[in-house]
Image (cartoon, rainbow, N blue to C red; front, side, top):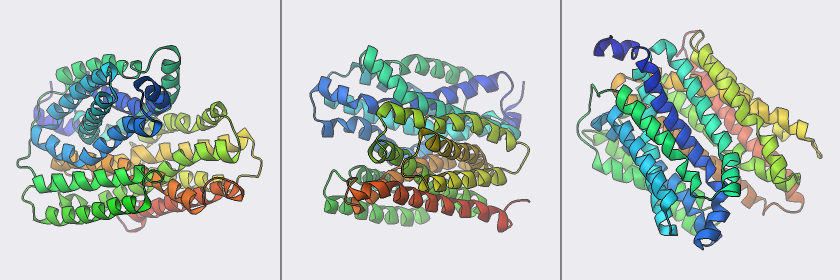
Length: 464
């Protein structure tokens, strides 16, 4: 059996390594499935609980706002409580919250449980990625990040279809009941295999926790309410969020135990990997929100046909992400990631040049190209981030990555709403130009991501 020191350098011994990884991967599957399975059932939930369509959106919003606002806090708490113990706490909380959602008989109870689910999701994601660095040796990180991306893609892809089947043949509480067996299995693997934490940080940045939670929460709320609340209200939320984020940044330079230790950004390779992630998540968020509008409004495809056309995206991610992970064990992760960003950018660009009457085939290869690029981008970029992070900053790096994903995708969704608003809606002559404008903007943002990724190569930050 390996010693603790050897485990830190070489990962856990086999088979403990695989059981510990299963605890993380099941958590990823649960959280990705839960984030995508509920939306399709919102009309059914609204009718059953007798609430308006505008109100029932908070079943989704409560989860999103709670997780976005607490990612950095959870990452900081994880390093102080102990990442392994904190992750297990997150699994227990997520499983109990799922049971609470299923048993909720009122709208208020359901939203409350969804907020708790969002908090526990932040716990899982904020420390889960970093635990891979403890479980696996450095030579295997590319492979496991590829497997993680595959699991996330499968959960996201299965969510809408599985949710539709459950609502059609059972009842909406089963959307949450299905988490319970997964949660119990993950808790068992976690308790048996993750072991005890060997390092814990001390102190907690209360001012940073309050300002970051308020800033991120208000920002995500403002993004989510574009088009629903008045423009001045949304603008006020954004301004307050920016001011709070500025205060948070100032506070981090003075705090004894900062929530976000800024020394993590001393590594230029890490910093550019984060910038690449944010811009890619923005572009991806735009595409995922815009595609249904383009397919159903601009080209009059049915909901079922739209779902079929979108399928190549998660399928190619599921195929390419594990391959990209294995490639990074043999080739430079930055190079592989940059190739993925380039392919994604080309996919976005190809969607700009759709014909006036495109066939399903015209969409399928373009959507597949986007998914291929995203699949080749994600695992290598994640590996690059964690390889350039000090061991004692692993939880922080995991929280930054999760915050980048949530914030980037929220900004992407907001930009789609902005494009629609500037065009005066999706009607008349503007409808035909929507895909050109929105995919051009998404392509430009992914090009910025490519520049950030390539900077790691041409500034001598990586070995050629």
